[in-house]
Length: 309
Image (cartoon, rainbow, N blue to C red; front, side, top):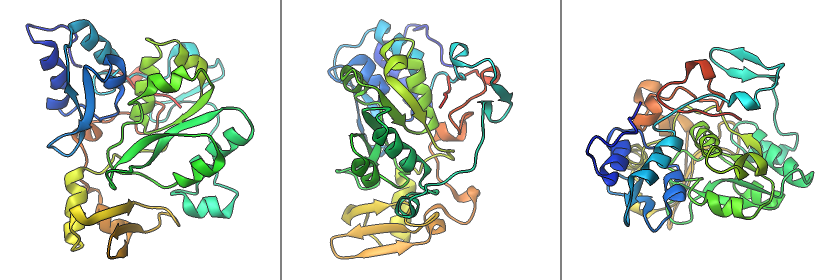
């Protein structure tokens, strides 16, 4: 676990240590905590979304970042939120009901990545007025292999963002602005992002009040920028020429679809990842993840503070 004491290091050195030790997921919460005038999460020379110090940073702010960053702490669902009839599993964590489900709408089921369940749930939450909007990730408008945070207010908005995103994404980059709306919403993101927002709830009491639903997928890690570029080159595609990338969907898992100005090519899902897990290119933080489902068991928490959905 990363130490909160400064040991003579500057605030910038302490923040950079999270990145240098391979613990950063680029989720963007550090920018929200510090303010973009002091810390900005941006794509750096390593290809990832990484925090860069822009202004004067102090130890108190870095302490707050360390307290919420899923690279420095993973814990389970807070005890105060665990219902008395909750069961516990050493792998799956706290659970109340396990079901097998998929989207009833065949178009949503086809367009989504794994039966369209998250897309269908998000659409239902909006249609039933249980929430006013969904905070989730869609294809980046500037980096085709990346994802970017978006707010969806209609079922059509949700549908437009269907499909897995295996590139870097920062869904918590502007979480303060989402909370400032003072409207109930649902959050859909990777398990580590769920955990980060759970951590942040201890610093901002609006989180527990406004985030009504926490939805995540079973996560096996996301693709590295270098690994994605290698896939392009294996496929005789110039990475700089790519204008659109769909990792999966339109079937289960569906094809990996690459668009350039001159062509549209579809590949088998295995062509992107490789024949087996030994060929997967994953960020360092994903290789040490103890919570791939957003429900880390509290009794196994240690170096990072996990999640709940």
